[in-house]
Every structure is written in C-alpha cells, then in structure tokens.
Length: 183
Image 1 (cartoon, rainbow, N blue to C red):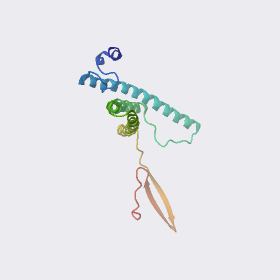
Image 2 (cartoon, rainbow, N blue to C red):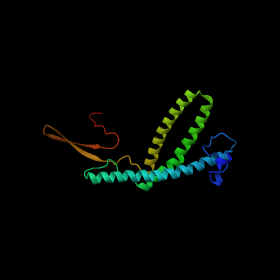
Image 3 (cartoon, one colour):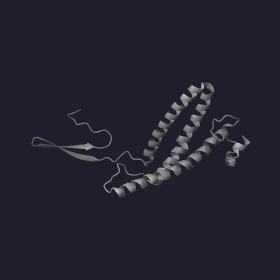
Image 4 (cartoon, rainbow, N blue to C red):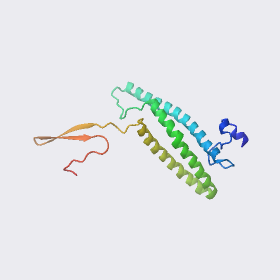
C-alpha cells in the first residue's frame, strides 16, 4: 500500500488508489478523497477528449464541405470549448460516480457469485453503464446547449385537390401536428 499510494499527490496519499470501495483500512474521508481525485482526473481527460473529438469532427465536416460544396450537415456543429467543457463536467461527475459505484458493486458480486455468474453480471452491468452514460451525456449536452434538439422549422406543403389548392403547415421538430380531420 505504501508504494501504490506514492503515485498520488500528497494530499491524497492516504486514499485508495483505484476506487473508493477498494478493500483496505481507509477512513470515510480517504474514500471521499479518492472520489475527488478521480473526479479531477476524469475532468482533465474529458476536457482533452472533448477538445480533440470536437476539433476532429468539425475538421472532417469542413473537409467534406470542401470536397462537396453542396454538402449540408443535418445539425450545426457544437462549439468546441463548450462541448469540451460539457465532456469535462460529464466525466468528472457522472462517469466518475458510475465508475466508483460499478467497482463497488463488482467487488461485492465477486465475493458472492460463482465465476461464471460474476462474469455474466459484469457484462450486464457494463452494458447498462454504457447506456446510462450515453443518456446522461445527451441530457447534459442539451442542457448546456452544446447539442441542440433542432431548430423549429415550418414548411408549407401544397396539396392540390381538383381545382382547389389546400395549404398545410408542418412543423419539422418532434411529432408532426395532427390534422383536425385525421385526429
């Protein structure tokens, strides 16, 4: 334990190095310190990955537009810094919390299940973790404005019937409005 904790900064030297539910004689404060330390690490990784990923994505879109001037993206690309900050916040809190919780659950399951049951439960837990992570990121991205649900656009559709022409307005976001005669 003495050699493993030496890799942590001095303020976190007495904290578990892997996750807050790591076995050992750690105080509640030490375990919370691990949550904070891992959160800071996840924020840094999330910000760097958000910067790199958004820059690469926006660069590929620009290349595609240069190669095909008629190309239009279905969505406006997110602002690079805002998207990176959104990733940092998501990684620092949601991913960190899920990481810590998942490790604690897996530690308990390893002690109580047969190896095949443990492996199966790990697969299920990790798949559910990925789904939850994706849903929580999309919710946060919409909340911060780095991902938009779409601009409300109204198109005019002309339908000709005999000599009469009927004009309908259709909103392109969410559900299409029901026509009073169809409802």
